[in-house]
Length: 200
Image 1 (cartoon, rainbow, N blue to C red):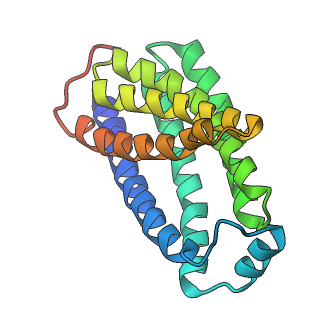
Image 2 (cartoon, helix red, strand yellow):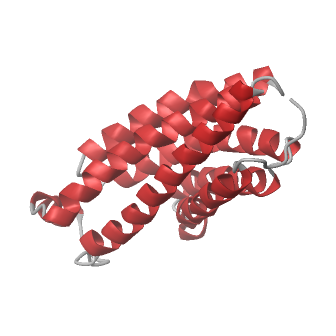
Image 3 (cartoon, one colour):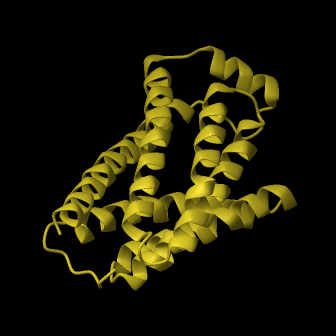
């Protein structure tokens, strides 16, 4: 019982950190991308990235740490969910390091390819998001589970849109990010002490 209470607390604290980091990322992204114009070509992005201001550097450090904390959160969710469905939980966990490595590589590259790789990384994380979302839903973490599942589906649609050249489907990555942000808030609420969950 003590171990279960401890994992709930650690998941909640990790979700709080990730929520703060994600909100910070949204704010800094708005500040750093304000100069970007729709007609820019690859060299314009390279020139923009070469002129790194303080907000740009802080955002880079933040999203790198955000990626690490997201990996930790999914590892904790694996530990919490493995007794419910060990095969599905492990299947989700296997893809988490792939997402982590790809995202960290993305944040070290400042070329036009980054958008696609970043979208692909989130699509890969979409699979564990769906698996863990379904399992969380079964453990009566209804909002967390539903929102993580929606995030995963939207991120997968997003990479399909990137690949097919569909602006509509590509928007799935952004919408998935919004769903993930709300899912983090739901995790913070549903993993508070004394929260209800079904037996493992």
